[in-house]
Length: 157
Image (cartoon, rainbow, N blue to C red):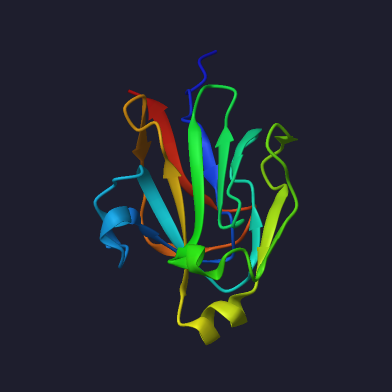
């Protein structure tokens, strides 16, 4: 019996609508300077791990998280555009560097009302930061549910 090999999956970090990274209003992300992937325009501030792995980065300002998957995939989750300007205000982190997480583990909570009052976009980038080793497959725009919806598949290459 033959089994069709499926490509590994990255899940939605938040509930909202997902878009290809090329459509980001921030040129640094749209031009894939930090990696290739997608962004979610969230309707909820709970941010979950999109893959299983080890936390490699928790920014001092709690707006960015890095996860290393068992297969070597490096995911960067960047919550908000210019959210670093909040200096950690409005973020509650639930993980530490070195911690192992499962897909769906709560990484942090972001205060979307504070973002709106501060004039900061809550768009959350989910990027493959080692895009020289892995490539994004099958990304598109659609409504997504945190922890449940595939936002893209990837493969080595």
